[in-house]
Image (cartoon, rainbow, N blue to C red; front, side, top):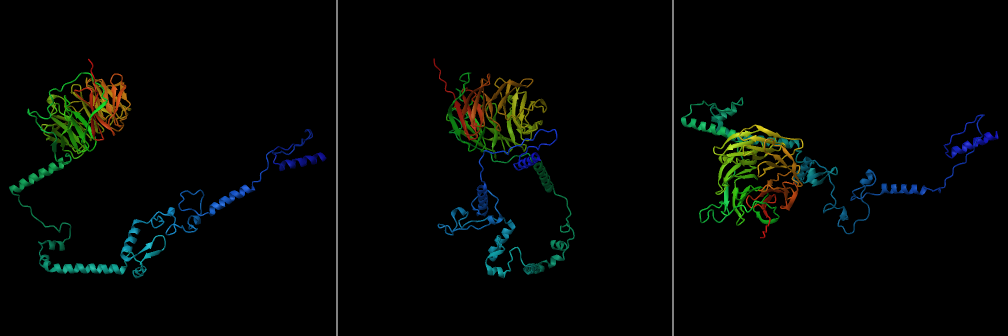
Length: 593
């Protein structure tokens, strides 16, 4: 019994000490019971009563402390009473109204934001200026003239009493009666006459009864002629209204000294000593001259064909300017004929005429020397690119890539549209003649290249791959076998212009950033270098054989949109940018005998 009693006491102590050891089972064959001692902890016992009181006191102080109205962040959830409890304490000693400067948001104190509907605000605003009182949105009371409030029973300008409304109606009716009595004497005779308008208005019963009936008689010869001319003009206006661009006065200003020299030669005549210096091109690195005359960006530049003694620039300020390159370096003539920015310009083969395309939906054919507009063409859409057929016998054929996905061909002699090439799915960006001008390649916003036979509106080659991007600028290699395309994924791709029009995967020029910009790509006259502007104002030069970057020039502050190699002086390059400047670069060559 003593052994059982000790076992019972031991089990109770183990329960009190939270010991999780299982109780031994008693059986006749079991081994003697082991008595386990209570567990001991070596860590000192800490009284956490003060810690609990401290935490509770901080929480209590936070919930009872008033909130500073200038505080932007609250670290606990305040009650409604805390949020709207007024600030207590002594007044600010240096503030006129006792409000600290930090609590002001208005020179007269603190102004609270209140949401009022526009109609309610206008109602109270007009009521205050008419009656002298208005409702206070923060309280259920009125402010302003108390006597006026009592006199008008607190009505607003939009809440007129019913007796006032009846009074106004009676006054209006009385005015109408007075007017009708004054007119009765004049209309008494006309009311009885069915042929008068007064009788028709008094007796009208249908929408047509107020109109006089008139029998159409026979027209005279003069009236018939006038009616035919009117119908003809009306038909032309309806049919051709959409085909016309914005009208603008065409004018030109000459800035040079004389339009002809002492020998009678025109100012656009090339100098007789202009000829190629050598056949080897060099990369320019030095700034020679800067032309600044455009008030906005320059979108395109073109050298005078074959000689390059003049350079033509298209500006976003709606003006086209031609500059002297060899002698004075000044602006020679300004052509003003577009109502909006000029997108593209292109010379004829002899340079005596040029084309311009503007965002005013007009294409103009200019005389370079006199500045007169020879012809104007428009389809009602924005032309993005204009080209003349390079063949000498087809200089009267104009091709224009439009914003409505078409390439339109005009005969400039007759002014008629002779062909439309309509296969693209986006705006047409470029037109490039290849294969001895028998074909031309177009690029579009639909990320494709299409090859056409000139004069036949059927695509003979369609180039479109999933990895292709839009190509807003293209140019032909001097040998005519390769086409360089400025791709918007920051690379220049090369296509063969012979029968297959395949991509040359071995030639790829990269490193520049042109995504989003139609930066012009160009070749040196000997074909050894590839040149392009970029979106950061730099001009890049690559070696044609190795495809490596040869040199970069920081040319403009904004986008360097255009770059042209001089046709005769092989070491000189012109660039234009959206900063409104045209810059002329060259490589200084020193020949030692």
